[in-house]
Image 1: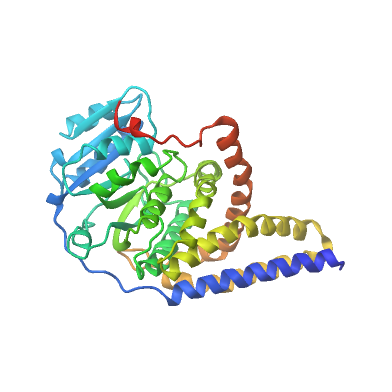
Image 2 (image 1 turned 135 degrees about the vertical axis):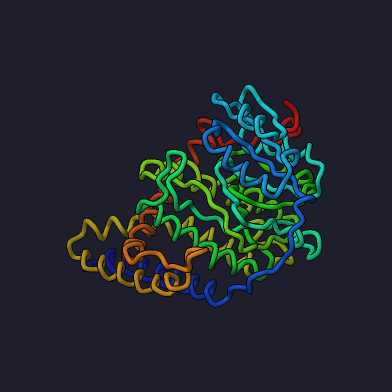
Length: 393
């Protein structure tokens, strides 16, 4: 093999080592599960919704078991279906925009009108089921926001097929993020992403920081959480399971990652750097922000290495070795992550496919960089749109 071949192998082995060290740090550094009490009278639920009539009735029915209808505010963000009609029929407060403002702006508009001290942000397809709203973590323990244990639904509902293989893959992926990643950062009150599917915030904080949000849809929940951390917010994790609808076809999944999630991560790179260098933050925060920035560099190198190994006969034998290394690293997390309510592990088919799934995510993150550039500087769809206008129609 030539020098360039040795360089490829070195890059791959170095990246594998970094990923392994990260996994061990987070597995061994997880915090204990938090205890809390719930007082729903302190909470208003805000649901920013566009064309969600098919999902909304079940979401609101779940909520009404804990909150009165007048404490549920639905923002119809330019829907062309019966979203407003469904919400009004269920007794909720409803605000409708004839033209879409975007999810972040719709949330800002609604929160400005919330009268309770705490706001529960929900997606229109989130089922909270028996999950408690952990208000005491804010009212008594002094934290500023709470992330829930969010998982893709196991059922087939609303046209979605949560029981297929892609659904099982995503449940394991989300579960790993919750059981390992969220619990690791919970130990220092520094959870860096409160999922847009469900999150509890202080209403005053959402109002205080709304003008700092760029109002870009991609990664809007990540950006909201990072802004809280940049302003000294303490974000914790409550192991209360809520269920959301995830992509059930590979085409939907590719669109979610390539056009949504990963451009949203690149959109936050400057904030990652600010948070990493901010005085007084936990080492866990610095570590995660450093890893996020490391991925910006390492993902293209990994993707290039994957292609080089695949097309170079002398290197192809490294492919099975790399796969087996990642498979071995995945066994312990697979043993740890259980499906809430059943305590079952994901299937062994998920375990054996997951290293390939991780590689596919790496390639998509690489491809998302030019997508972000296109959205940010060419089409302008990811250009910041800050200002007080998001609170008025």
